[in-house]
Image (tube, rainbow, N blue to C red; front, top):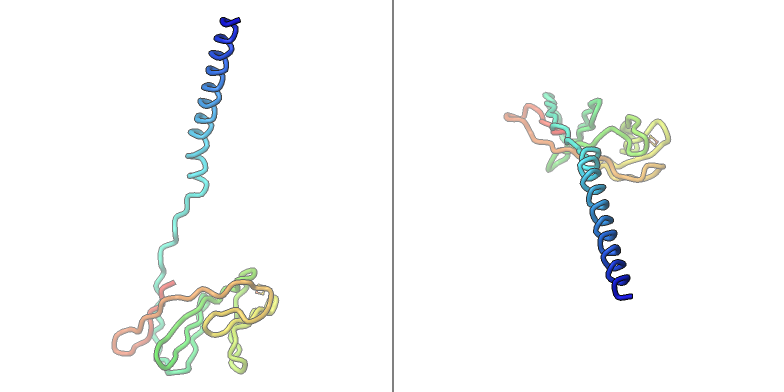
Length: 139
Ligand code: FES
């Protein structure tokens, strides 16, 4: 009777240890795989020179961004709609960026106003070039 309980306890102990080893082996195998799959290399920043003399209130359209020049600063927002990625146009009269695909609308600051897009537009860093020769936009 006592011998049977000892065997059972030893067997239970060995089996539970084997289960721990199996779980550890599965984790050791899949952890590098998961790390590899979610490995992400951020894109290198791209610098775009806008060598144009822009005045306050001017708007510069680039294929990837729209540059606005305000009284105190200049800023740029992405032209890629946050809904499905269509290229936005700027409506001068409404002062809105409008998506030609599903009519999402954004303010010049990139804030979503209407439409199926849920997120605001990406904003980019803009620095003035020396001697007022234009702007450098970092995408
Ligand atoms: S892609 Fe712009 S609203 Fe759908």
